Image (cartoon, rainbow, N blue to C red; front, top):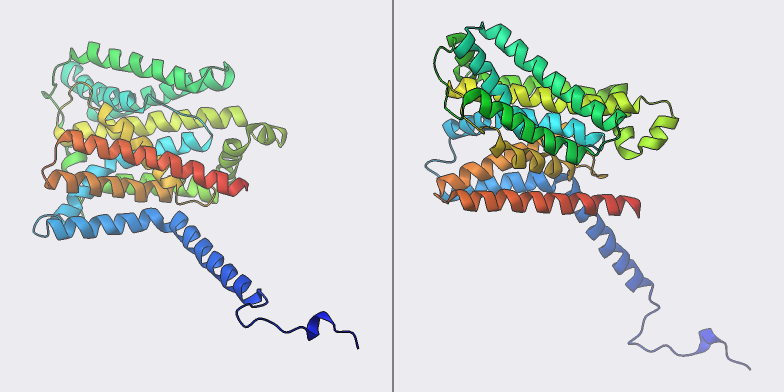
Length: 346
């Protein structure tokens, strides 16, 4: 009688392989879930770890309500500037003039009050109009004129800095400021700095705009594929211009908060915010599975950077070390963002 394959004896040291495949599949699924969790919540986990680390290193100073309020107050101008940049990046545009716009916006408001006795309300309105005009100009040159946003905004940054230096003569301006203007940056409401409440309102408005409105869906569509969005009837040019206007207006608001808090304007005050603003936007994009720039991600990233800056300062590290940390965070954020996009395309 002929023997079949099933009649042959099996070696006790070998298996059919189904168990191995099941174990391997289980391992892969667990690994995939871990990767998905870290991609979505990795930045939030990093924020919690940073808070725990600095609290352990400096428990007497870092882990306190006073320090928490200080971190939030210092983060407010950065958050506002980063939100404007988030909107521009969402339409796949870049704006390197955000730091210069912060400096010029704050300096113009102070100079109008100090040199020309302009009422503080009119000074703020003038600064906001200036920001909107700069954003419209850059947006028109890029979306209608076809210019490269990187080059245009780099040139605009130099131009704005030149105007600021000429206006202030590179001196600190602090005379004849209206107390009501100073109160914007120095007053408190419900135990929290008014700056924090202003930043929260702007963040909430931007979140609703991007996540809950048709305009927000159009913005993300332009960022994903402008040609397809145009063929679908999306107003691509107007949305790209809106992105640049958002950056400029938010930057001027940040400048107003900075100068009202210090009750003065000094040269190049906005440049230190350029790198952290980009780092916040790109770090925040790592919280989205498809690496979208989102308001929630930007808020978490700003808090993370604020905690890192405050913690490193409390450890009495040099400004060079803090700059190294910020630059490293931006590099890591960009690479994680690219990794997320490449995974989404596979």
